Amino acid sequence: MRSKISTVTVLSIFLLSASSFAFNWSDYKKVFLSKDGRIIDFRQEKISHSEGQAYGMLLAVANGDKTSFDSIWKWTKDNLQLRKGDKLFCWSWGRHPNGKWQVLDYNNASDGDILIAWALYLAWKKWADLRYYEECRNVIKSIRQELGIEKNGEILLLPGYYGFLKDDQIVINPSYILLEPFNAFQEIDLSEFWNEVKISSLALLKKIVSDTWSLPPDWVVIKDDGTVEPYKKHLRFGYDAWRVFLYDSWSKTLIFRQAFKNLVSFFKKNGYLPEYVDIKMGCVSLKPGSAGDYASLAAYAEVNGCHKIARQLMKKADEKILYEKKDYFSASLYLLAKTMTFKP
Image (cartoon, rainbow, N blue to C red):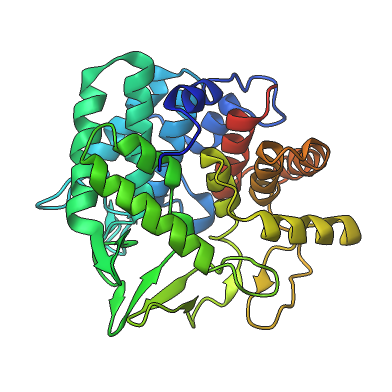
């Protein structure tokens, strides 16, 4: 079943101006966008990711900035879309030990692929440029052909082409599951396939929120018998998984209502959101989460009708972002939440 939110609704939300935000698109470009269209991750040796390029493209569409969109997309095509035999994107680019700036890892990351394709879809809808449509279709086709996999009668996407099939299990990142783009892809590629991916992904997300906090871990494994459990190397809800609230707010499926209630209860009692929660032990970080974490939960609160707590959380995010000017990941989530959910 398709999400109730329409493509037009998503697009109209996306096109809200962000000019009066505490940290806006203009600020973001000054800090993170190079002159040639690269989004820079200063906290990881100034490397760039397919995911970061996708965030930049989405924000450019959201702000009606076609010049920046074309610049970011051109750099992405020229430097990351280099894999032989498909149109997926190398996930990591930076300075090699030999001193050259180049691709560091030719494996892909499906969240980057999905979000780049979705950004192209939204750009096609906004600017009616058929080039975006054709490029979007090529990426979506490669995602389907190279990453689609059947497991226990369900159709899912691998997080990457290589390294996620391990003996009797598949390793999955819940924050790589993006239901709203799957809706859009049905318009361009094989609709039956993408509908099945969405249904299977939704069922998986519902399975993984079974701990005391009802929070998804950063990574999970799906075994041959159908059981789903946290991946042994990642027994936390943290850096990766915070994004599920932002992404779930886009589709308005609101799968994580109980987890949201638990985090809000913790926030009201303790005055902060923890950077991570240990899924196995139930203990929490004493260090607060990032501005992007606060903004992601604020976006979820807003679409869930909890406007007061949404404002409180976003106020915290506004305060924190001013001290995180070199954190591209937090700034990206913050600005995406602001642009897509909150009017200036």
